[in-house]
Length: 232
Length: 232
DNA sequence: TCAAGGGAAATTGTCGACAGGCGACAATTC
DNA sequence: GAATTGTCGCCTGTCGACAATTTCCCTTGA
Image (cartoon, rainbow over all chains, first blue to last red; front, side, top):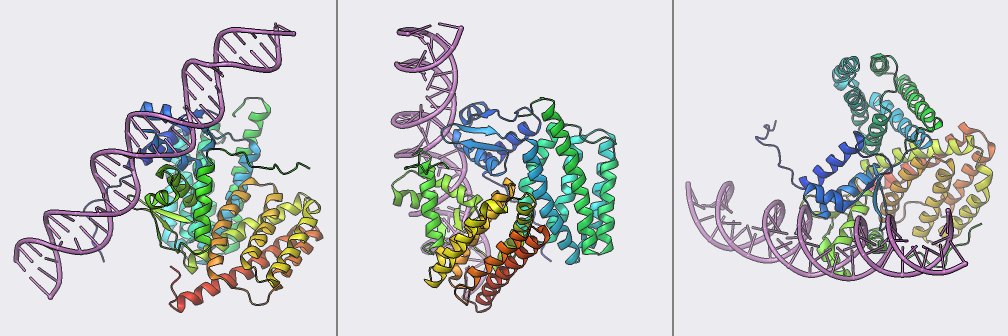
């Protein structure tokens, strides 16, 4: 058993990472709105760094799907419409469905069961405190843990990419869900299905769960669009 | 029908694109082998450009999965093992399975049927001429067309990312398939299933088709690994 | 009033330079 | 002789500057 190292490896390249984090927060929090221009020179000036690391951070967020870039025009916060969001959930469905089945098939449920339950508990508390943003964060962690445990790193890579987008646009919508705690508790059904050891049951539970979220989020988004309350 | 423009608009960003293309070719052709270091300063010197666009191209290929980067050490050609390849095919399976079903469901088969058949014909010819690389190219185009027609842009984005990896490592393996023309003709089964208009049948056909490819490629890779003939 | 045209300002694409990190090898200590 | 420490060269991370392009506004003309 190798002993715990005394210090964490001190990550350099911190600059790019930190800038990416700052921009992400700005997008998620709504300080930067979809369609807004993100000029590297402006960001660089504000942050007191050169354009190079800002550029890198921009590329990072571009591949994460939060920004889009146009040649000679720079970066813009990605605009999302309901159809796009629907595609996103459809993809998420494909990935998580299989990942869930795989986790069961590989017999890895027991290893994460307690952790999943703890996360559900956290979600319930947060939803009662109206800490929606944090609740969504834990929600994603719950799903991520299952995908990670599946053992297919490609699944996890796609999930992580989608997660930042889901988080960003869910935050935009603010309050999609009606009954506090209900969604959080619905996650219990997934854990039960995982416990059953039945691959198909687990797949179906996740299918249903994401389907509900998809209908809620996309539906809400469509209503906003219909009302002309431009999210773009 | 929009006519093909005579020349691509020569954006300045073309430099990054061209470098990315050059590096991609070098990797696919085997001039750069998995694990090889790709020093931006060296590439920049050879090509007679500054490091900035080389760096951009590197990031591009990193997000395409052809390169990996390590902090302060630069880019390396990605190494792939059989498990990784298996994960890749599993993901591809998820995507294409649903995309195929979606294409049928949306009633878009008729619009692409002729094109698909033409591609199969091309593949047969190429396989008889032992033009494996080009055959794989058309093969991917065939699958891509179906995914594209599904209408879910997210599916297409994931597929495109995987495609470059699949192409790169399939080229490494050189000759996986035994009977020339057999694989090419197997694509006819997919078109038949699409024609049937039965969503489930189409899904199953694609499932089977990719499953066969997966077994062939991953199996071949595993044998190479077992023989100690290091691909890494 | 509005469309077309012509800059000036703003912003990106590219460049060369410099400082610091990392790996390899030599020097040193036990 | 093995392990640790010092040194060197190469490479990346970051920077400021310049060139090319786009955008915006203001003028001009119908």
